[in-house]
Length: 414
Image (cartoon, rainbow, N blue to C red; front, top):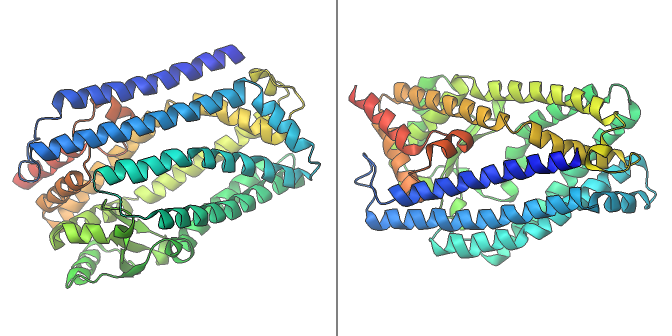
């Protein structure tokens, strides 16, 4: 069984790398053609720069992925997991403390090993193409703050999870699921006020007349939003974006200051109308319900499999390994078994994005504004305009931007 799982892992990993390869080859064949509708925003120099950025960032991602997969093979298939589990057990801590230490140390080691790739991506690749604006000092401050916050949250989660397992050994799966669902909603409420301001400065939109245009569009869409804010994203990167954050009465709209500088009022309003479409069409709640339904099923299946004495033997490990080690084994097997859900989730997400585009077109009455905004964002962010259809079908959560622009222009023409 160990050999079979290893072969499945190698096959799926190889399949992903093959998809990367055909995606880049497709870009090579088509990357010199300006798509219909993009003529005013792109020229040959910009296309070459966009293609080069895609190739360079993909190369860094490939080496990062190869390194991670090599560590995974060593950890699971070469005896490192058993040795690590034995080391943690010899610390003679309580069940709950041992579980926290087991996963915290793993997280810290993985994060530290990934630092060189993050630094290279930020200060070499992003800087080479004019995106990086962060300093080494700010990068390390962000890193330290992220690790402190992550350590606190992970320790809290693991402490409660292992505490519930110890308290209710026969029904912990439902208690753990309920706690995780509550924690997810709690973080959606608290993050905009406690965590996000630790990294960025948020202030009312300063561009004259923009906030009034946005609020008028919100009223037209029947959506109440607490605040419309701009974020100082430009102190780290020249990439542009906008997003909703929070839930319920603490919903807020956040615009990157880079986006505000790049777009007209109409284009910004159209982008936000698209985001409103996700709320009005129920995409946010549908995703939450889907995620929690899957999580409940996963909790019950995990409960059954973790109680099965034969689980460690699947990877040739001793039957007496700890529960955290069994969780690692189960997590690896689950990642292989759930691989087909990835393309399905991507397809569902693309359907939602198309619905949100249609909603934005109806709400603003100007689909050409959203098309123009997408063209500008893809040009400024050096997005890949020519993804391979199979690669996009399996990995893309949004329809390819050329397809979205074509649909919006067709709507405008109609």
